[in-house]
Length: 303
Image 1: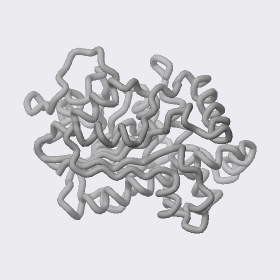
Image 2: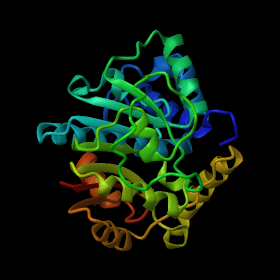
Image 3: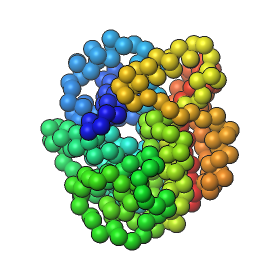
Image 4: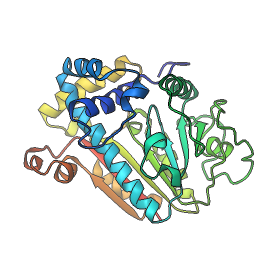
């Protein structure tokens, strides 16, 4: 991400969500705001997507991870969750159209430049910012002073338009009025691969520190060296594209090692869906032909 500029990969993810509505009819997940917030019409999105047929793999993965996260959130709300934190929100639209959004207090976390861009996109699209939503500017990478744990005091700033300064996660959420005593659901989609491992584990450590309990859904990739030659070609193409945008992939995990460390951190439930598992869930007719390596979606909980 370039200093002072919004995330370019956030725009790419929003494009894939919109393209799924056009090209697959929103079969995996429906988002009636995807085209509006992107600011493109259906024909233009279809033409752009069809110029790059290799993008279908990423488009379907993004649709699946969004559907999985929203299904898990709906189930958690029935179990008592009343706060949602969207980490690296980009142009995510859940707060404006989600099935249980009015039962939640929602915090969208991102860099101020990306948040300012999103607010402009919302205004241009005529999408109102709802009363249950707060924007919180946050720096995921370590290096700024702050605390790693839940901040209970000093959360007087309730302003929904507060976009600076950039704070560590715990302080940024506290300044936005986050209640760390409430059981909270975090979605963290399309972010982990771009962070250092230190930043990933710092964020997960904060989540497990919450005394009210927490859930998190995030995605990650298998290490490139573990991929088949065919999968490595797709990986390298994707890595080159995001590197050109100034937002290179930096972190991968081995599933068994990741699970062990999540449990060691304090999570009591870990569900990790690799390609065979989410194919069996969402594309049962294709499950037998799917590679066992690639992108993963994790739901970890401490409740």
